[in-house]
Image 1 (tube, one colour):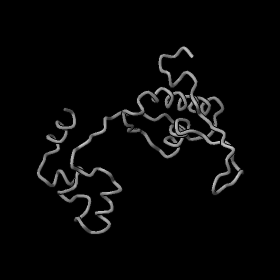
Image 2 (cartoon, rainbow, N blue to C red; image 1 turned 45 degrees about the vertical axis):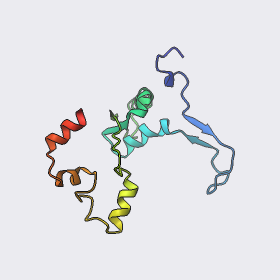
Image 3 (tube, one colour; image 1 turned 180 degrees about the horizontal axis):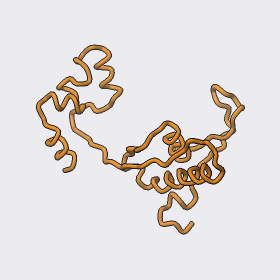
Image 4 (cartoon, one colour; image 1 turned 30 degrees about the horizontal axis):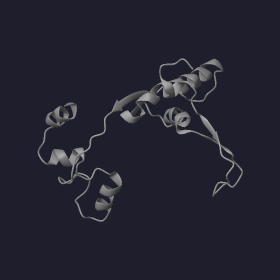
Length: 145
């Protein structure tokens, strides 16, 4: 409770919901939270580096704590859980005005043949931007600024 990071003081890792689920009914009443599942699933799926929005920066300690705990359990009992630590990189979201960045909306344009593909120069994808003539170095400098 004395931790400077308030997310670590009393973390919610599991929830009980007695409302019947639309698919499973009352078979399951408890559910793990996103904060509990994320480090475990990332490790199971072979993720080595998790890229997370700055929105989750305060949750990084909790991610590391869950990851370290299950990594320790794996070593302590020599279980073959296959869990390993994941490196987290935080990034800031880039918002561009008058530009569609949503993958869902962009994929609709690709699927309906309104554009050549993901590398269409009108797209805000890296391939599209490079086809416009920007260099990788220029793009990198823009992102760092």
